[in-house]
Amino acid sequence: MVTDNWTGGWFSWTRQSDAMLRHVEKKILSCLKTAYKRFYVDIGSVVGQSDKIWTVSLNDESSRTPLVMLHGMGAGLALWCPNFDALAETRPVYAIDLLGFGRSSRPKFATEALKAEAQWVESVEEWRREVNLPQFILLGHSLGGYIATSYAMKYPERVRHLILADPWGFPERPAGAEKQQLPLWVRAIGTALQPLNPLWAVRAAGPAGRWLVSRTRPDISRKYNGYVNDADNVIPEYIYQCNSQTPSGESAFHSLMTGFGWAKNPMVKRIDKLSPALPITVLYGSRSWVDNSTGHVLSEHRPHSRTYVQVINGAGHHVYLDKPELFNKYVLEACSRADEYDPRTSTVAEGDTNKTEEHNS
Image (cartoon, rainbow, N blue to C red):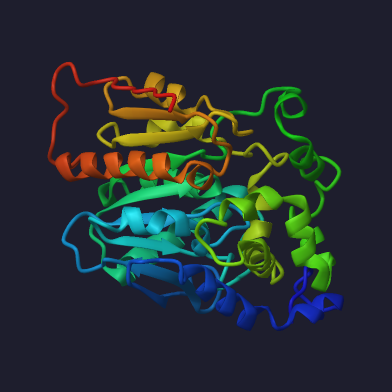
């Protein structure tokens, strides 16, 4: 039974979502040239009674530092398909459905923002323990970047390099800025629908949910045409099935936000909790609606740390999809830096501090 109020009701027509989600995810991943594994990781009672994290791994026999990828709000691991082959060519790659999203468990998170954030962080840590990754490169997109940063604050010894792809939740919310900067569809979510979960309309549409996704964001489907067969139908179906089930992670995100574009507890107030030794790469799309000041703020607050900022011209918020070749290139460069520099044992050479690089590509 799938409901928005956790107790049952008229959303039951989507009860076949689990089987369909498995099927459509497999269709998307069939475009990969690299062999991959799909499996559940049992992380115990982090939020619910027996939480499980759905995982895909590629090239996991490589001895190089693994890359772990966290998706954004309302997404799932299959949407990284334009990136998997390139990123897994030289190292292990793991991508997960965040707890509360995709095929992972959908427990009821705390309603207080910091508690919900902490639960997400602990779910990633318990997953790491079960998969047995002593250290890794952590990449997060949008909400995934927010969770990745919070994880790096609590478990700095585990993260060799932090990669933030158009991260959500860093700046404070300026007065009136939301109306000025966010696109119309985002403002509609953040204002008129503020009391409701952001994607409630997808579930309310029932069987028409896939059509609603394809009509509201046809640009996303088109960008997968070079990778996924019948992308115009398969991608909206995947996004719909990811969001037609119990809105567990979506509700947790709702607890974190104040207006769709801003966090109740923005990272800018907590940058001092990041280890100065942690190298960070920030990737932005030049056309993104997300505030792009994070790289500069990180550099200003961490003047003796390594910070690399890449602005990709022509890309929007979905920078990994809008310009996948450039995105993959910059992620691989960050991974190479992680292979060469261990923040636990290395020291930053004189003249190599406050190293911020900006490239319009």
